[in-house]
Image (cartoon, rainbow, N blue to C red; front, top):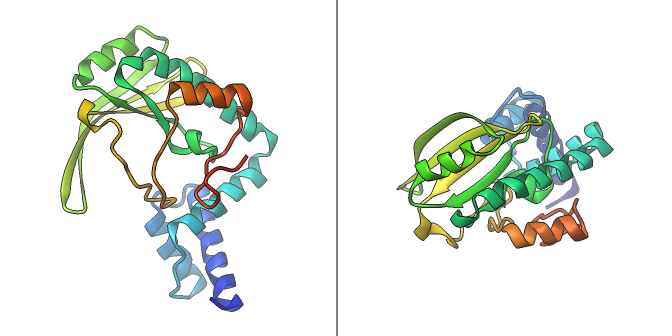
Length: 210
């Protein structure tokens, strides 16, 4: 790729990241299309390019407080995961990767055949559950069902817990944003991260960066 094309992709990725960061767009695809239209071009960067720009923008805008918030979110995630340990919980999303920004929530995947039991476990904690519902999406022509629990911690952090069938534990999933495998962190792995390097980042270009 020549330098002019590279610079153009970078500009569009930055514009798309701006639209996402400030809430003008919610989805990557729409943000990229609007960014290209705003700049009067027809080149689109990939989702990874936009995600890295979005990460850089959050770092520039939010500064050291961002790192402190990440560590807090990981600690609170660990507490929730321990409550749900029977469902083999995995921390995923931006809190796993270390790419949080303002408005990010804690995303946890749980593998359990009885979502109602997961809800009951959470009701015994300090979490305030706002909504719990089944959802179905079609990916690559195949329907996937899951149960989503939306809640808030006592410190005001938002949490989304996705309950999948127990047989799906260990199934490999591709990240549509970063393009790599969603590995996440299980309880022992998250404990190790918090103990050794609480702000550790997990990005695809180098596997793991600190």
